[in-house]
Length: 339
Image 1 (cartoon, one colour):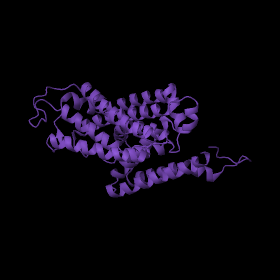
Image 2 (cartoon, helix red, strand yellow; image 1 turned 180 degrees about the horizontal axis):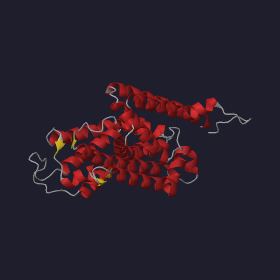
Image 3 (cartoon, helix red, strand yellow; image 1 turned 90 degrees about the vertical axis):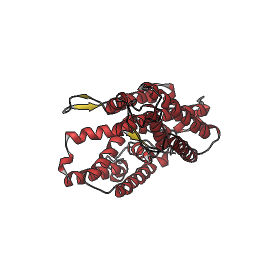
Image 4 (tube, rainbow, N blue to C red; image 1 turned 90 degrees about the horizontal axis):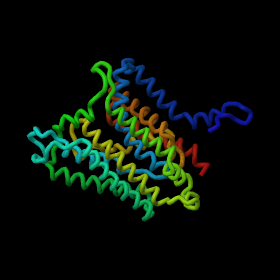
C-alpha cells in the first residue's frame, strides 16, 4: 500500500493501517524487555526459534486455506490426533506401560508416513465438503474439529486413557535432538521447519498449483473461467494442510515427551493469528511465506515474553484474542475496498 499522498507527503492514516499492529506488538516487546532485560539473551532467542518451529509448520498448513478465503478450526484437533497416534506407535520396547506391548520398535519414518496419510485423508474430506457441498469452511471445519476430537478420544480411551509417554530413543532424538555442542547448538526442529518452509515456498511460488491457489483466492469465478479446476484445487490445498498438521503433531508429542487427547487444543488460534499478522488476507489471494514465518516468530516472542515476565495464562488468552481481532480488523480495512 502506498503510504504517501498525491503531493508526496506521508499519509499517517494509511501508515497506521499498514503498520499499526506491528507498532502495538513492538511496544509490547519493549515493555517486556523493560520489565525483564534478561529476556534479551541467546538462550531465549534459541528457545523462541525452537518453539516457533512446530507452530510455523502448522501455520504454513493453514495459510494456504486463508489464501483461498477459507479457514480451518480443526487444526488443533488434527494435531492432537496425529500426536496420540505417533505416541502409541513410537513408545520404547522397554516401557512397562507400553500401549501395544507386542509391537516391536516402530521406525519414526513409518509413523510419519502413517500420520501424514491420516492427515491427508482428514484434510481431503474437509476440502470435499467445502468444494463439493458448498459448505462454508468455518462450518465444515467446525464439524470436523468435533469429529476428530471424538475419534481421538475414543482411541485414547481404548489405549488406556492416561498420558502416553516413554518414547523410543530414536523418536525422542528426532524431536528433541540438536546439532552442535550443549553450549552452542541448533534444534532439529528448526531444520524441519526450514525444510517445510522451503517446500511450501516452492509450491506457492514456482508451481501451477500455487498459481491456482492464489487465483481461486483472488476470484473463484474468474479462476473457473480461466480453466482452473477450483474444486480440485481446494481439495488439494486442504489435503496438504492436513499433512502439515500431522507432521506438526508428531513433532509436538516428541518435543513435549507425552501426548493426551487434549494436546493441540486451541492451536488453530495461534496458527490463524500468525498468518493474519504476517499479512495473509482473509479476503483471499494475498499472502507470502515470509510473512507467515514472520507472524509466527512475532507471536511466539510475545507469548514467550509474557510467560517470561510472569503474566497469567488467562491474561495471555485475552491478549492473544485481542491481537487476532486487531489483525483481522486491519486486514479488513486494507483489503475490503479492493473486493
